[in-house]
Structures are given as structure tokens and as C-alpha cells.
Length: 304
Image 1: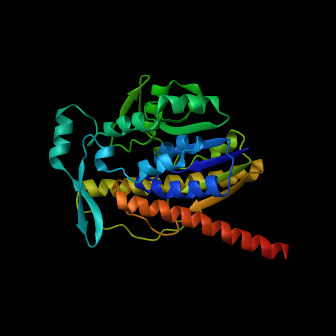
Image 2: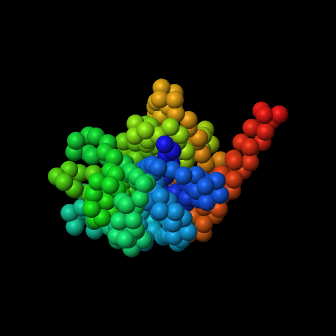
Image 3: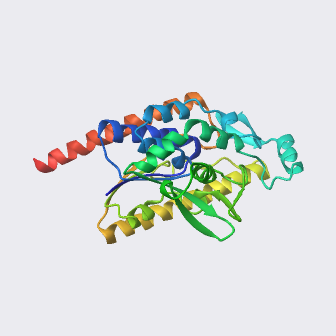
């Protein structure tokens, strides 16, 4: 059994889309399992349906307004790069409405209902593919994996949305009596779950460089300090997920191919810019293509 695993990474999901496009359309990889966390959860359903061009169009046209119904920050240019600073008006307005977070991402839930139709959901359930998304249950302090085969259309769309909710900047969702948030708070890269479900080969797209390539800019406010802290936590979770995944693969005799971002794409994946994401999709495709060429050359040398 083969599995495609896509990590969390916000706007960097466009790069993952490019990698997946090459794997599916050019290498004709036939995966039975598709697992995603956060931005990865937004990709996997359409990839399983072979609707690559459709999800590419979504990822290369999305904006801040596509995601946030109330955006808690504003984007400013500092030292040649985009940074985020608190939008005091929006945050205060959100608190006055009784929200428990700085911002709200209800526009993303609306977008999900528009781009992933009920007809596509039914088609996916009838197929031989299984799509699984990761969510964090904050009430029970557990990670949960939600399969497309176990829920109604509306419920599954909710789980995909929840998997992407990077609190406290996005919506905290209460469902089935529990509070849920971004799956990345528990599992950034669900390799272990793919192996547990029977995968013997895993292609894992990691939306991070294999080794750290930068030092974050000094915090200028409590808001930027918080974003830096969360980024650090997510990086450590990702590192542990990969380490555990490699360990499980060794025990279960599973092979893993890793696809890391070869360069630093952005220092803040909460910023969504159409032109950048178009470029990242193209770079992801090129990277997977070059990795395939390099692999074939190595295999040729070994056979020679």
C-alpha cells in the first residue's frame, strides 16, 4: 500500500501541490492513502480525485480575504521581507463579539464548500482511495484522524477546516462537545499514522527545509513574539514526527521518500500572496522533477 503524506505549512502548501502534481501526473503514482495536516488537508481530497488543475487554481488565486473573515494582523514590509503586526481594531472587534481568538477564518470554511462539492465527496467515498485529515482535540488533549469514509459531507468539510485553524490567529471550533484546532499542534507530518494503516511506501512532502536556514527577526511586540514562539513549537513537532516516522518505518519495513523545500520560501506562512504561491507551485513541480532525474542517475550508476 502506498501513501502520500503532506505536512502543515500554510501558504507553502502551494509548493506541496507542485510536488504532488509531478508525482501523480508524471510518475503516475497510485496512492491508496492520502494524509494531510493543516494546509495538507486542503490538498489531499482533490489529489485523490486526480483533480490537480482544480486545486492548483484554488491555491494560486487565494488571498488573505479568502481565508480570514476577520484578519487579526496587517502585513508590512520590513528590511525587504513581509512581516505581520497586530491589527488592534480587528482584534478588539473580535473580542467584543465574544470570540476566544484574535481572528476568525470562517471565509475558509465557506471556500471549502465552494471548491469541494458534495458530488466530489460522494465520488471519493465510492473510490478505493482513503483521505485522512489530522485535528487536535484540545478538550481531551489528543490527536484525532478523520477519514472521509466515516462522516457526512458537512462534517468532513468541518474537519478539513478545523485541521487548518492555526489558533489563536484563526477560529477555535467547538464540535461534538469538544474544542478543536489545527492538527499541526499535535502532528505536523502524519507518517506514523500512514504506516499504522498499512502503508509500505510513503511519499512525504515536508514544507520546511531539511536543515534550518535562517534566524528569525527579533520580536517587536507581544504579537510577533507569539508568532515566533508558535513557529518554533511547530518546527519541533515536525522534527519529532519525522524522527518517529523513520523509526516506525524501520520496524515495519516501510520505505519513505522525503520531499523537503530546497530553499526558504517564506518566514511567515500566514501571508497569502497569489503571485508567490503560483511561483511556489512551479518550484515544487520542478523540484520533484529534478529529484526524480537525480534518483534515476544514481540508480543507473549503481546498476552500471
